[in-house]
Length: 477
Image 1 (cartoon, rainbow, N blue to C red):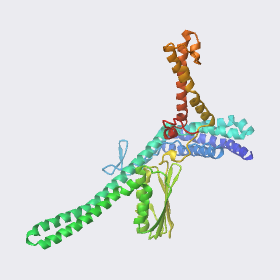
Image 2: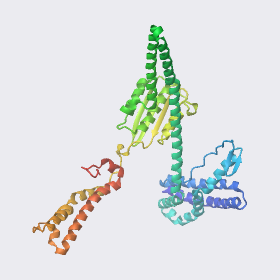
Image 3: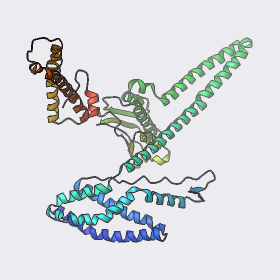
Image 4: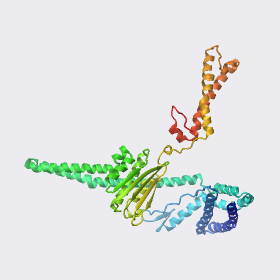
């Protein structure tokens, strides 16, 4: 309780700081837009955003209400044109300094979150004063209400979320395209320098054998034998290139056996631990396979390692892969060791890579690929509350009664004028009411079946799609 009172007093004490910032902001805005001193606008924005970010941190730490930053992504750095000049609107510059500053100034000015931060700063002292009685009497409720107020103006908008997603997708697309282009160049280089050269040599050897087949049959046979050996080497080279594109063992046996095959082919003593009950999607398998292959090759080629460990695990819908070796350490993604290519492969799946490689070793690389596995593998899909499950069970157990005995069967008796009334309620009513009641019974029964299907589907569409079947239209509670 004392801590909550301390937090409430801290909020009230910040009113003085916010009032001073409001005065400074008003002065900066007047100077920037009235007198043309535009260089004062970015410091004003940074000052206001700093206070807003501090409010977001306090909200998360004090009440558990997390407020993500709502700002639009920063503009990319300016790129030079074909003539080496940098463009800003219709003006060309020799250096990127002014275009970068202009783009950043426009980004701050056009971001709706900038003006929402300003509105929050202007109204926040008044809101705190209005919440003063609640903060003093019930500080916990007051702090939570204040956090909800901050969330109202400081939370991301739909536009900022979409802009962030678009920027992230563009970056992932560029990385994927770059990785694909690099892979194509590697394949072309391997075919040009290896397979193509061998095929040319085979052609020349066969040409020489053709010329000697009449005059020197022994030499022609020796050349043909040499050509046969060269064709076998070419076939081996082609198989190596094919394995570099997409290994057959990966396509046929899955990631677990493909990693074990890598361990057998590696010059290191590699131990493999795989806990993968199901196969991921083929692109995910390929990304993980080539990442592990690159890390084992780096450990043998650059790290002077003797042994390594590969661990592939599933955590809910996430896939985690760890590769550890006893090499010399000192791995650096900027050193051209292939780690940058691994990061590009993982970025296409929102994956991240963490490297621990002190000088002297050991080197440990952990790769996390979030949400790359179907959610129903995790086994933690949301279950329906008991009252919903009971309602669904009741609907399935009773919907048959109004639908068939009181509806369809009663309609048949009414249509063919069968004198037996049995327990059909509609047939005991006056004649004008019988058909409306029969149709109502059928509508009620069909509606109960529809509700029994839609309640589980609305609760968790993914789980319903996984567990529903013709024999079991619903799923377990």
